[in-house]
Image (tube, helix red, strand yellow):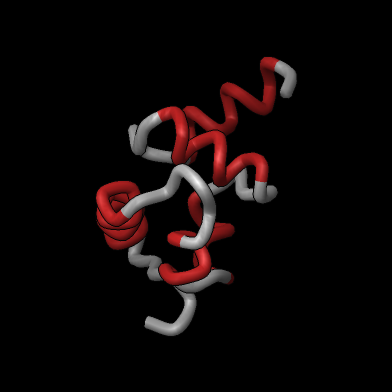
Length: 71
């Protein structure tokens, strides 16, 4: 991953921990708004993403008036 992608990632995801951040980027998610196309349960299936990360992501989505798919 080049520096531009790292900066974009840091600007778009809240601090959810390195394993969860890596899991999201490895799955092709680089922006918070991309998560509106997937459900919480799909994100939880990613190795490294746990309930705490999903809770933090939910809060960040809510701040932008967004939600995971199916909510």
